[in-house]
Amino acid sequence: DAKTTQPPSMDCAEGRAANLPCNHSTISGNEYVYWYRQIHSQGPQYIIHGLKNNETNEMASLIITEDRKSSTLILPHATLRDTAVYYCIVRVITAGGTSYGKLTFGQGTILTVHP
Amino acid sequence: DAGVTQSPTHLIKTRGQQVTLRCSPKSGHDTVSWYQQALGQGPQFIFQYYEEEERQRGNFPDRFSGHQFPNYSSELNVNALLLGDSALYLCASSRRQGGAYNSPLHFGNGTRLTVT
Image 1 (cartoon, rainbow over the protein chains, first blue to last red):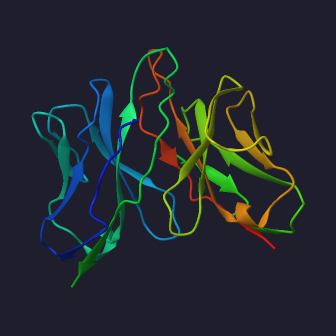
Image 2 (cartoon, rainbow over the protein chains, first blue to last red):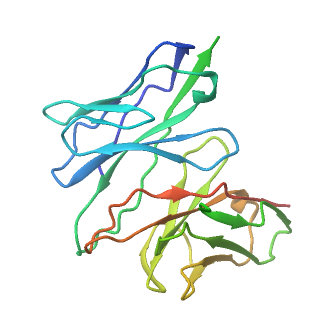
């Protein structure tokens, strides 16, 4: 799986947009970009994923650059409950073969939302 | 609709003992994976089960073994516990679609294992 690089920590004011960057310059054509977050003492929570088009759901938006070498997770209106560790993961998605879709977590970005 | 449930939530064992952790997948999911998360680290993949067989394994010794039952629930067994096995053990489930394992993984809140 491709390696991802994320800043170790970021701050955001409550009510403002939080933009979390991720670099995945060695991503392959059969790898999706996934974002998870982990709030203290809980399991990781799925946020969003995408291949090459921008994606949006009720939680966040995912912007992937045209060359797919980097992406940005956007939380449009951050709240105190969004304080968590955010993981950017590239995941091989193929039918059959030897890929079984495991997730390889890095260190993530600690996002702190303050009042 | 219950999500992924794990039991017990906390467990304390002595070095050398054996432990069994349990996981019930989210409704509609048929694939179960286990992850180990040491304090301050990201989760590390242990193995994945589908159709009651181990399909993929991470870099963990044979002391770590598992099982998947016909109802898709799963167990993680760890033998000869070491102090370094103290960690949060996470179970994740997903649904195999069209031959691919691409549906998002949903995680439980884990079992906190302490080895003394």
